[in-house]
Image (tube, rainbow, N blue to C red; front, side):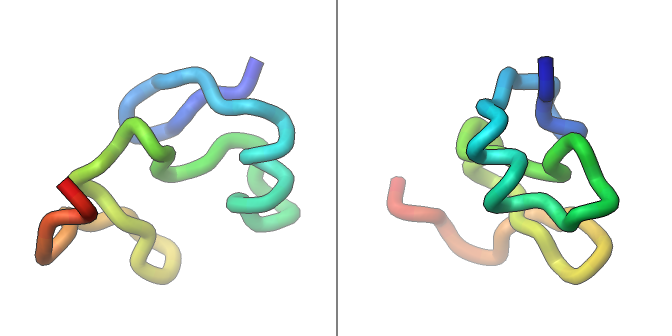
Length: 52
């Protein structure tokens, strides 16, 4: 079962296939991480709200 590296939430195989690089098997952030964004090879705090 795949899970988010940031918060540990479950993610689907489809989400992993679309949003992670080929060499990774778990995403760095997921939709359950509303205050975090991917920034190159890192994850950082969002600078603005994300639709909330």
